[in-house]
Length: 331
Ligand SMILES: NC(=O)c1ccc[n+]([C@@H]2O[C@H](COP(=O)([O-])OP(=O)(O)OC[C@H]3O[C@@H](n4cnc5c(N)ncnc54)[C@H](OP(=O)(O)O)[C@@H]3O)[C@@H](O)[C@H]2O)c1
Image (cartoon, rainbow, N blue to C red):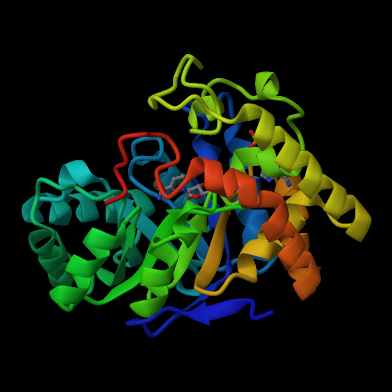
């Protein structure tokens, strides 16, 4: 398995295992987190060979970017920083200002990959992408990507000839919505997909045995009933099927003698069109465990079996690639 790839329209490579810097800020979705664990997790990822780190201003209002700078001070030239600008800042002058804030938080004078976090259907995409081109020309960013972009937004990028280097999407064994239309479109446009929530926020480690075990913040996804307190969707959920599927994946992991998270990440890395997996880790032990993925080689039979096991869930959750909303924001 290739452990690195070169992103299109760039002159740099990224590690296909990418460290996700959302959960390390704790708070919303994640609960209490000690900063020393976060800093140690980032350092562990770097020492284990991860060179690409995904963050966003939205993660702790800049504190994730801050923490990344603090943990890897002195290593700037060896790492690839992927950060994001939120849709509320897509007006061209706001994109520039958000980038300036990001540079300050990250204590650097360039961001390697600057991504549009979610589509904003109100602001013309060509205006926003024009601002990204401007940032690229001025050297403040080296490349730009998108995130949660569906077919319509991707088609617009193509029509205007913008040089999109990646599309970050929710993709894992329990959430295969992008396989219907978005992944094929990305492959057609030669835009690698960077998969977020690749172990479904911990569900694919086997640590939760029933829907009731899952904390409310994490049970906001469309797998769970809309009656969970923080839910923003109107779906009835598919809790029983989700946990039946998890148990079946767990059985395969046990049979092969690998961890369930390793199996899940290795399956993703074997999918055509997938550039990398962005996996979170809240302490060095989780990072070490996730890195074992690189030792796992799955046979075609195992890949087929995992596809079969997860097919019904894929069917029930359908084509909507928004993990959290029925009224999809992925356009
Ligand atoms: N573009 C977007 O809209 C978007 C959206 C979401 C995420 N992202 C990016 O994708 C990254 C990853 O996604 P994610 O954080 O949502 O989900 P994830 O990577 O699927 O899950 C990460 C969480 O799973 C648990 N975990 C990780 N490794 C483990 C292990 N070996 N054993 C047991 N538990 C383990 C940890 O939480 P606990 O210990 O608390 O269980 C960890 O925070 C984020 O950090 C962010 O960079 C982007």
